Image 1: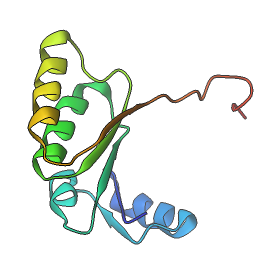
Image 2: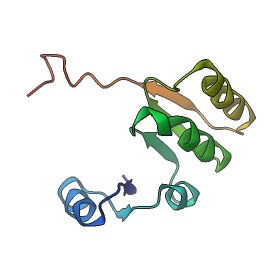
Image 3: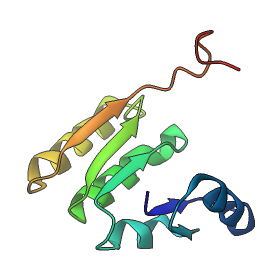
Length: 105
């Protein structure tokens, strides 16, 4: 767990200390360019998935993205093309089951 990115730098520092992240950033574009970052886990609002995934792939990162991948088919196709062009990058879709009784608190 290298870098956690979010909008509120103050909250990020506390979060990082609690959960063991090495670094924090409020600039996702800089974070995905960091050579020490190997995997970008995208758990942002849906309208940001495409831009973040494509930028991460272009930076040579593996990408794990929350569903839905994109807002529409055109965006999904752009993401697919970026994944095809990325050398040695793996892509994953993950599912957050926070409302399932077995994992909800």
